[in-house]
Amino acid sequence: MEYKKHILDFKVVQNQHLGMNYSLLMLKPFEGEVPPSAPGQFAQVLVPNSKRTFLRRPISICNIDRDNNQLWLLVRRAGEGTAALCDLHEGDTLNVMLPLGHGFTLHRDDAMLLVGGGVGVAPLLMLGKELKEQGMQPQFLLGARTKADLLLLDQFSTLGKVHITTDDGSTGVHGVVTKHPVLTSDNIAHIACCGPMPMMRAVAALARQQGIDCEVSLENLMACGMGACLCCVEDTADAGNVCVCTEGPVFNINRLKWQI
Image 1: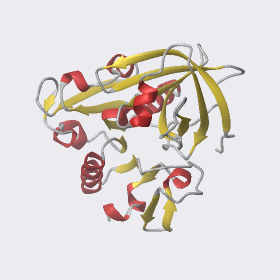
Image 2 (image 1 turned 180 degrees about the vertical axis):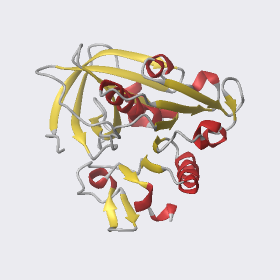
Image 3 (image 1 turned 135 degrees about the vertical axis):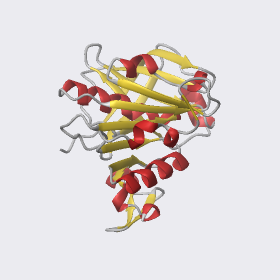
């Protein structure tokens, strides 16, 4: 399904600081409703009032709260642009282009595991919400360095069973996500994964080994979000070089050369 693209001004309703490096921006359009989108699609956000940051920043759509007509964006403070977004205040205006790209496949069974790490958990919240609304029972596997780095646990726990790993063992299984036994359980047939590239590569390798269908959401460098600048090109097995912003960001691992 194709979703119409929009460029809209949003008002910052709330900026929830999650630890030192993350912010959950809750945004409301000045006019109309938040445009519909699919889980896994993203937005291109214009950094406001910046004389040095000219390009929009690609941010995964975390949630669309229809009851409150809000768009949620989870932002990691990584550079000057994202730092400016994390420092926004209630009442500030943010210009957003959305929805962009193609999202995750919605499987009509209860054998889907959503695996995320760091800011990569963002699109999995919307995916889990969509699956639950359609009567599915998704499971989540969330990894972080420490207990304090786990994000949006309260929201995920309302949608399905949450499995946790931490690098330091402060909660959940000690180690990376591929150490969790749920990944090798017999009732997992599909994996949706988003997070740091080493994590996605490891999950993809395990999924291939176990014969599990797996999709990953790539976070290649993007400038335009429309397939014009060619910053985000990924070499695929079936179509050669493609733009992640238009062909993805979600890909089945069977299409990715780094997984073959």
